[in-house]
Image 1 (spheres, rainbow, N blue to C red):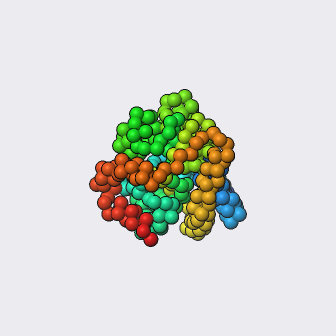
Image 2: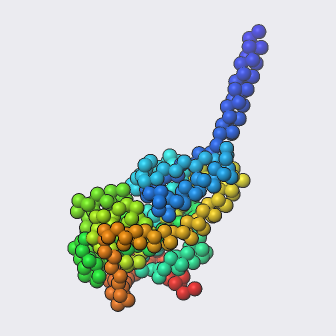
Image 3: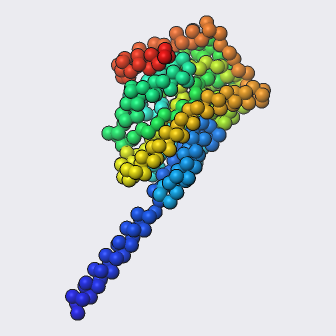
Length: 332
């Protein structure tokens, strides 16, 4: 009797476990995609398009949840959240990765790329693609580059020559290269989370910032900065990343489809981002909130000369060969 009871208990447990496993297997894979910018920006649009295409092509298998505008995790916490698998996908600025691989500091070097086309050529090169996989030993897998655009300087005084930046406090991302960039201008870099930038500029905690037009307009930076200098001095791009362990746990067929979708989304983001920035530039002009300063070739050359020593400063850390490969992308 005891034997039969034991067999019944084991059978019931086995059936219950099998049912639970079956139910778990039928649940969609959840990908929480967190970011810190508005939905109207290139990154925001990319996240929503990725969500839409996954819903269309992998319905019932994968569900993407998008959390914009630091609504889930802010600048300072999102990388930690990814490593803990509290979120599975991010698209942080490339400036966020220096602590995981110093080579990615390359993208922060001032005046490295002449235009966004040069950026795209480098990202598609073998050297550019190798950087996507350079953090896997840290638990981070890069899947794609999403470009926003080149950055402009903003302040409450006219910035026409490098000397005009002296003594001003500029909001910067947590990047040693960007820190060095402003120190080369004899300005004061202040590390500040993206979501705190508007208030910091409004209250005078910082006097200026560097952003592409899409971020200036979407975050209303133009409302608290009288002047925008079209310097095109640096790059704001993102790397779409996933938690490595999570990524390898996804069935191979689903992973392949997610990569195909992401490649399609990335092409669209990079195609539309420059146009979106130009449109937001026009909106700023139409609003009359800020004066946009166009540099002469001679003035731009002076800015470049003032910050070019930063290249040499980080040459050993980044690698001279990598810097040369990136600079070569300016000449197709």
